[in-house]
Image (cartoon, rainbow, N blue to C red):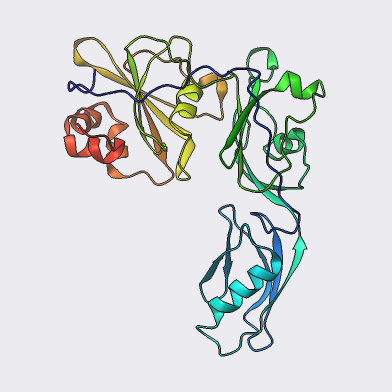
Length: 310
């Protein structure tokens, strides 16, 4: 509806085999991971002293704007890497490193009340993660909407049924290594491979913006999962749906993913704009009917947002 040129739509994932579960990898306790808290000190410079935490990307940020890729190293190897980095500034930095707290950063998103990145123990339960994220979102009848947890650890992704997890089925959760992503959702897969040629378009702060096949009954969460999830800049309290009406008119609907009862049902041809915390002028223009008309007709603006070749 919004683009008259022919495009090849991104392929949709096949339906998952419920029994196709990939065994998790393990990691020795001696390996530094995202979330680890370390004490750093140098006898030659008091500035290089304190407690620092490895960030979610596995990087340790230290004084004098020194950054070291810490994830995957042992403490002795990390100590050597830090000393090499500081040797450009100091003749003999003599930096020592010791482990203070062994926690692992895990990102929790989807149908929870407060998505975010949280430090947890190596064998933390799914309940602990959900508790950090202030619980599951509730639907009609005050029942949790989420039925599945999609867990990504490195190149392994497993989707587990919450009913199986709560029944005590063993082996469903990994021993956390730091950097995992846990996405609570109500369908097992994002979208099936079958469906009509009608489409939904996702724009703005989404990892893989573009056009995706429309399927009746699927909602914003399904398409968000299919498009790789929101970027770090996305504001989950400020999404805009742009819908074509008769006689060339359009309507815009602003909504929040934190309020499940206000999330609109989707129709073929809908455009979903994921706004940034500080939206660009293009995104601000897209929030208005008149502005969107000008925005959508601008080929340069469309290319800038969706990154597709026309």
